[in-house]
Image (tube, rainbow, N blue to C red; front, side, top):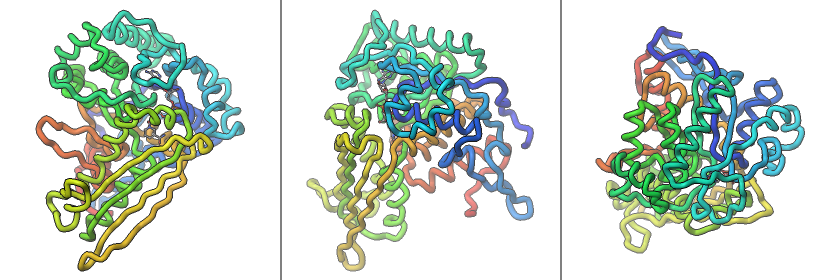
Amino acid sequence: MKETNVKKAEGKLGVLVVGLGAVSSTFMTGVLMVRKGLAKPIGSMTQYDKIRVGRGADKKYLKYNEIVSIANLNDIVFGAWDVYPQNAFESAINCEVLKEKDILPVKDELEAIKPMKAAFDKNYAKRLEGDNVKQCANRWDMMEQIREDIRSFKAEKGVDRIVVLWAASTEVYVPVNEKVHYKLADLEAAMKADDKDNIAPSMCYAYAALKEGAPFIMGAPNTTVDIPAMWELAEQTKMPIAGKDFKTGQTLVKSGFAPIIGTRCLGLAGWFSTNILGNRDGLVLDEPANFRTKEVSKLSTLESILVPEKQPDLYGHGNDIDDQYYHKVRINYYPPRNDNKEGWDNIDIFGWMGYPMQIKINFLCRDSILAAPLCLDLVLLSDLAARAGRYGTQRFLSFFLKSPMHDYTVNEVPVNHLFQQYVMLKNALREMGGYEADEEID
Ligand SMILES: NC(=O)c1ccc[n+]([C@@H]2O[C@H](COP(=O)([O-])OP(=O)(O)OC[C@H]3O[C@@H](n4cnc5c(N)ncnc54)[C@H](O)[C@@H]3O)[C@@H](O)[C@H]2O)c1
């Protein structure tokens, strides 16, 4: 490894996860099992991927921790908040993602992860009934209580650094309100005034994390850190933020498949995506206001890859207002499938002289199995970014996210194309490792 100004990953890394449901318990169980040598972290870029550094005779392919200092899995200490009081072991058993044989060997460690009381407001997720919830005078107090939790966790566990990851339910859609969400001072005033409509509980977690010197990652599609006031706070506290929404099943396929259509200049008349899933995530998303947040996130992927206004012949027709292809995304709550989500994509394309063709993709996936390695990579790479002195929106993490944050106030366009995102990821690692960024194909 080259000498760089990136601080070494020394000491323990506290990983505080908001939500102790299917994704987080699968993530935690996996990390603990890998540590014991009883499972493999399949799907994790930080554990497997190799990047080329240097060119010509100097060319080498290195793992991430050979390029930069990445926290060792043995140094991770988990903590969590949840609305329900079940510990991580009970949660992993209840969620039925993993078989008991893959949970029992780390039972003791999982049982020790007991959720702290959640900063919660039932209006943001009506279908949740848990009572492991903080009593808060107002949103500012809610945030102060979370700060206190982070400080106590740090002191009790003796951790050196913290990363806060949101893997809790999707909140109802909070539209960006310029009067509240643009300036940090306005956001703070709204928290103090207990403006419950504009300040989601997730914003209190994010604010608290950044103030306590911890990067914040938004794994759901919530607006939380995707607002200028939070960008200002991240800049002030010099902390990285990343979001939003883990790119796992259908959107991963979409952002990898759409470039086939785009790079071959084939036409697209419509793309219909539907899913059935039966876990608690699916239950929350069955509520139209919560689904709206997800829909906004899922719809954004294609537009920036195919850019209908640049190619009207190919992508400019199909919907009601006839300015682009028809794009529809549906999620249906269907309990028998639990975490094993089934996604169908019907893609209506057209070719030479406009002749129509169809592509069907049927992905029988496992939601939390796909999300767990993303949690690990996002946590480790956000911690790396903080040690490298990178703050604000981490665009190089877009690879892992369905709806990458971008500065919409200056019409910045997000990069959704999976392979462009991968180049951004590789180049950020090269740069942090003291190598030259490049776009050479390998
Ligand atoms: N699994 C995937 O493929 C995937 C992909 C993208 C995004 N996500 C998102 O990840 C999140 C977690 O998914 P999951 O399947 O683990 O859901 P889950 O319902 O199993 O777990 C979420 C947990 O969050 C808790 N919670 C809700 N609000 C909270 C709050 N304010 N504070 C603390 N805890 C709170 C709930 O009680 C629940 O236990 C969801 O928002 C989901 O949309 C998942």
